[in-house]
View (cartoon, rainbow, N blue to C red):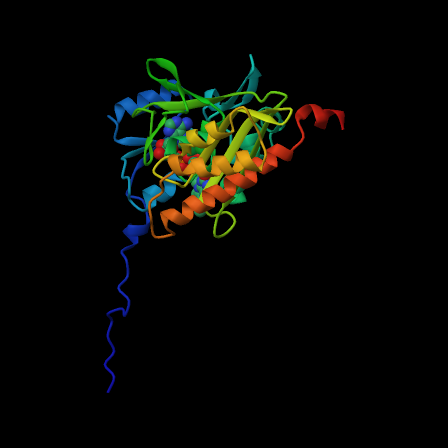
Length: 311
Ligand SMILES: Cc1cc2nc3c(=O)[nH]c(=O)nc-3n(C[C@H](O)[C@H](O)[C@H](O)COP(=O)(O)OP(=O)(O)OC[C@H]3O[C@@H](n4cnc5c(N)ncnc54)[C@H](O)[C@@H]3O)c2cc1C
């Protein structure tokens, strides 16, 4: 005889495990209001922009703040503008705007080229450039590309504003130069010149997934000779990384197969990825070399802006 039992065969997770712990919600209408709310909660709180990384973090209870301060309506964090050779991109600029903005395509094209690789359309509609930089996932596209672009971050706190360069800003896994309570207001990117070229590509198991390795390169190329090369890699360690030895290998060189092979070899000095559950460090380094070769060939062959304009 079969005895019925009420005990489930598969133990159920309590519903509380997939929902955030209770929190209060406050929508700030200005930076001053956001800072006042942060001070009142004595740090037991967090800011929310698009919620695309924060909400999963709260749902998994990796953070349990008592207050969520919504900064998504702050006018001070909006807009894209050009002044004195620098493009200022407001922190609330969504990934989708990064993809379609004519100003970004013209003056900071590496960001436009990386944008289609960021997640999926639904996430790109809500996620923001400021949020992805503050979150600092080492496999996220935009934080890494700010290194190749020599970008600067405009950060506000209750005392005022300051600027911090992208190089050195990513301090460790999910750790940045933004101090507790501070808000990233904008990203400043020096604009591309006539002879500057760039390319981005990544290798992922499925389109839209975080990559196994991603790379963006930019360089100035005059008469086939490369200068000011900056290569940024993502998903190769705890933080996005510049490849200084590989950059040095092409400095002042004609960008031909010999220079490209030298840069690929030099990459061994720059990157020492660890083995992890997805793949081995040796495989990641191999993929990084393949990507770098493809990207350098692409910028070597791509027409300069002057040629594009004449066509
Ligand atoms: C299924 C899925 C797939 C994804 N795939 C990718 C991918 O392939 N590539 C990729 O790059 N990203 C990916 N993401 C993350 C996505 O790009 C997020 O948009 C991004 O991480 C930032 O989210 P957000 O702007 O909504 O910020 P939120 O989630 O609101 O905030 C993220 C963190 O940043 C802080 N923060 C936000 N804005 C500011 C600010 N202005 N100043 C200070 N602190 C701030 C918050 O307090 C929080 O700690 C994926 C997300 C999901 C859910």
